[in-house]
Length: 234
Image: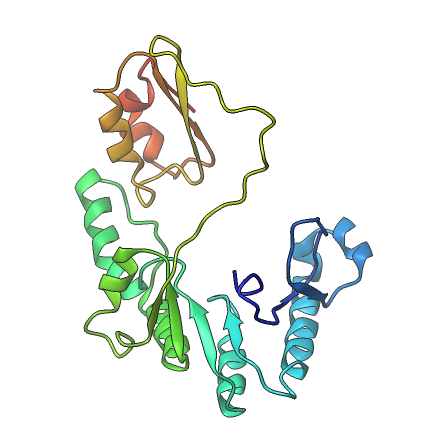
């Protein structure tokens, strides 16, 4: 979107599989041959090289658009150099999410496995405190920022997708045809799957739910009856 709007936009990443749709200029810290090596083996080296290369790009100014998982030290160094930082609030604030998730796990009788700790909350707050702006992709994320030091820094945004053009208009499904709804991701409490499965009890018989992904420990036993519905498959 930034490139389409006329901004000079450059993407820095460890490695990259080229395609014909990418608008930004892409800079990588690892050679092309690294695509054939498991990333876990070269993550540390590639990450260090990437940060060095990224920082050199700001010799003549610019705005840094950082993913939340970028090291805190990178946020701090950019701030020290006076570079404006825009961060991505991919999910709602951890400080807002933790009590909601704790309550959900407790309600369903499953040990909490969301992985949000006080240390991670403090780390996220430290990053956002160094930012000039925060992209918020949902109303829930905006609400979570209210009452925090960051409430006047959010920039309303949204996430979309790119779909290839179809040679013909998609044929509308007839009502009697089976329609399959697909979920891909972690099958567990955090993603709201208990509520989705409960709702499927009232869905028409021709509406099938297909769940694809790793199942959270303890989830299958707790929701065996819902996962066993005739119109649900995993």
